Image (cartoon, rainbow over all chains, first blue to last red; front, side, top):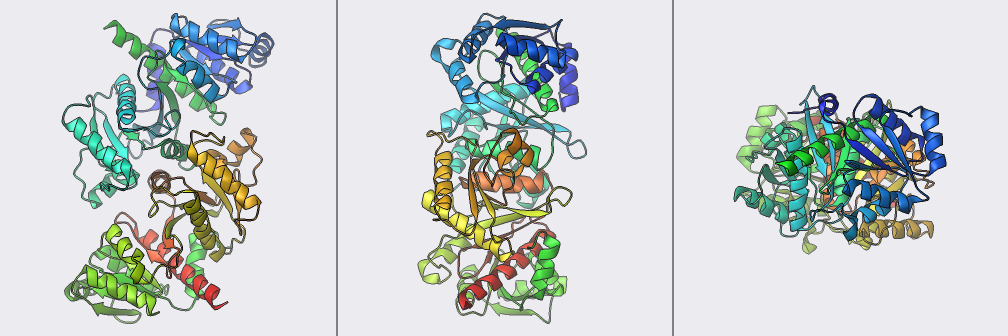
Length: 309
Length: 309
């Protein structure tokens, strides 16, 4: 099982080379991420964008040569279309956001005709490293990026998407906590009711490949000490590896708290589509971008093997 | 302005002694918190509960004598009634949860006849110390404890309640961030629309005593670096001192992340009622309980002065 980003990067390097289509690269951070990932042997890149900006960016950070190709287009819309086409035709294994608005990009990717959809929900899996001195494990948070207010059926898909990432990392039976503000089921707080129902569905075998528990709040989900003090008996309590939030605001802010409050290392990827999608935030550090690319590579290989099987 | 818990404890000690009614104390953590706060001269206590359990608890942790009185009752319901009556009649300045379920307690306190209500919403203000090496300031998060899904009017009251706490700590014009999952206004994400409206209301002078900004996600709210990278111009961006969450799940889990992920020092108090209400969590450490009692003392004095003025 891959337990931290060092192991994740090492593992990505052992896989067949994956090609990342970068949609309209235009700022230095993007070219730096491309250079670093190429230099470390994590992936190769197809830069889909404006000729002048690509030439400038490539020259500025020195990222020409092996593992870098390009396709020049007139504008962002063409870059989106060409990148999606490359993904559909197998010339790109992963797509990555450059200088394009996230919602514009997601709209293009989610478009029925675009061919990235598989019938599943797309969802963002944010992953951070719970420090070695405490745990040495990954914890995932979802969905802080795509689904605004998931209903019960959506949550089922959010669970399955995150579980797929855990499986790809070798965690065969991840512990999934359904977050709310309390561990009690209150009819007035719908997230607790959904959580109880999803936990039951897992017990009945309707959700597989994981152990689901909830409702839980963060303390009961990730702290064994808090779980014990509250006398919780769920196998997930205190040991959660995947946190499924009841809404996008909880997931987004909780994920950001691990960066801006706790200073943990992170990576994130959107799964559920034909290929993994990377949406580096403007505020993502170089390290986070590299982790995310490696995560995309591992997910791409996992999807390929699953389809081949 | 009080900027950290050391200053907060020191300040609480300088105020006229406040009496805390403890509702059905029965476990050791409660008696230990009472002892520590009494010994440090933060407050005096009225223990309202079962005779045998109080006698045992007092003996076990050695908290008899000065600053401790008791009222024996038969059960939790009587303890609630007596504590609320003590608060209404001015014999208690603060009420604190002992071994009683939070929702049972809040129901009793919120009861129309109970006399704790003032017509305002009650809301939980969670406060943590943003470490000295970075900021040396408090940041508040609300409401992770009482209001499940605040509407626009509720959010207005949540802002006012938190701003009152900031004022009590000497921060005369706190910066309030309205959290969502993004800094853009999207009609499909109602929390962004509410945030924009509340920001406008503040600009028009309909919300006073603070500067409101939003929608913001955590990065734009508390990281100047992220705010600059995203080219935000709001005076709140990167400098928020109060985070108003769009729902109870976001506030609750974000607050817990500062404890369980970041390890920050914390305190919390429920305001909006006739007296401050303390609801120590079973998982709260002794330090957090002491901070919360001191915060209750400061709020009690602030409310008294405001009414006297």
